[in-house]
Length: 395
Image (cartoon, rainbow, N blue to C red; front, side):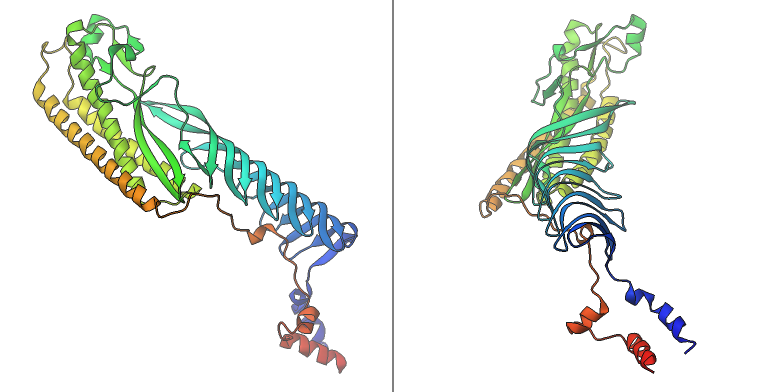
């Protein structure tokens, strides 16, 4: 008999069930303890109906309207290491209009979406804002982007970065001296120190469209007028030569943009936000690769008309011209072939629709069924330890 209290203490976990901690948990306001958290709020006929707050043990919270145990109408939820959402719910899922704040990724920060949701997925009209760090030469700049339009399964339909006011989209041999809005005022001495009397700033841009459940990407390159510079001392007779060399550097960016397009479309990525993370990673790698090629090009083809002779050595420039043109032709041909394959593949598919998100069980209260109820319903057998205790009490 002396061992009985110790046995009972060891069996405490078997007797800790869901229970009403305080108040009226049938028809009124109360606090109810669940297996995975605690609910504080309104009850109707023993169900979570009205306004209430649920806090899970793992840091999830939901505060808002409930109906028959489900999150409905307006509410706010947050995850300890995830996003926060404030807006409309339907049958436990984000549905309707709402605002979400997402955690930062390796590439973008301060991510906020405002707009339409469908069955826990961003789908419909909305606006996505974020900031990202962009490197220009040796300096870095934080740029804010706002993408407004249509979203499908969390994917913005269009360009993944906001357009710049001063940008020019790539075209073959399209650069002009007036496109360089930044004119460097140099002394004759400083001018002679330059390896190249003009420099371009450009980057790869990436767009996406979801068709029949797949993310279809398109890559292109842009030239930045305000960030590209042109020396005010360039002799008129040498402008065409310098422009041609800068155009070829622009072509290098374009060939890498098309390579990125091909690589991403070969992956046959589904239309979802995870694919966009893959695209950001691929874009970052391709930008670094492109920058290194541009540096090599500028070193090997460097020419200043007031330094070392007025005639440019045509040999290294011609070698690079041939290499760049071959890359442009190859990538353009591969892109056309890829687009043809995509069209044939998509002809057999249905149009893209908004997918339904899956319900996360951790976001709902879990009620523990008592031992007596389980035995009554014949769902499980009574544990041996409990039977031992009851038999001991009888004797």
